[in-house]
Image (cartoon, rainbow, N blue to C red; front, side, top):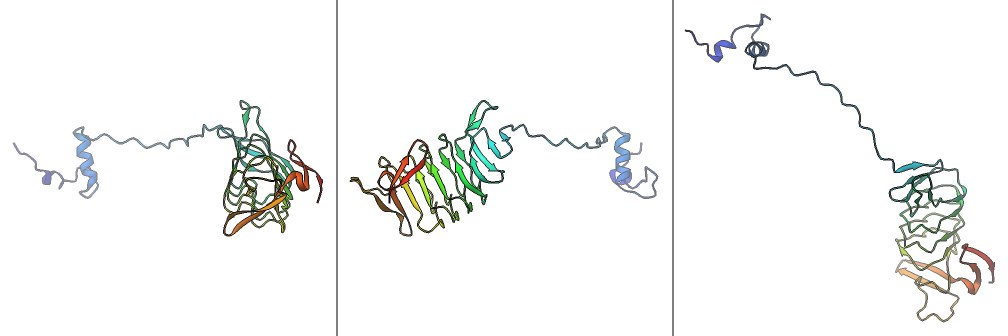
Length: 232
């Protein structure tokens, strides 16, 4: 009995297409049942995101999982940062994200007491913003959170000194001052404090701020964060 060698088999035009090629090898494989035709691939559907933590309120995009204001989308003017998103388990806002208000046309901003972090570049370029009140719970202000706020003349701190990123208030209005309470800790305040009215706070060799103790020159309402009277 004749036994065909592999070279003899593949030298025969089994599928009668006029040449010996891989088509003949496939023909043999199908004949002996050793090749199963590969099914035509079907395109998998694009997976849809199940992340429901990002909520768009119209003026704000809020990450309810982290309590972060991700982006402000409004037209500017007098803006109040929401305390949270009531329709999502009353999620509270605890931070304002990096560049969230980048070059927005703010004239004033009200930050809720629950905010603990103002991230890097949050209010950079808000050139119409004249004053800012930093709530008591803020523990960190990123770099340079208020850079290029060229009309910003005062920053009122209701609580103690937070952790400051480099040049947090760089390129603000000439004569910019940080206003604090007599009970505030940090900010370069003399220790022991002897009712000084003002001072200079040196953060490093190239960064310093003028600091005013509130009730000495300003009558300052710490509850609402507003200046009631200027006594200078």
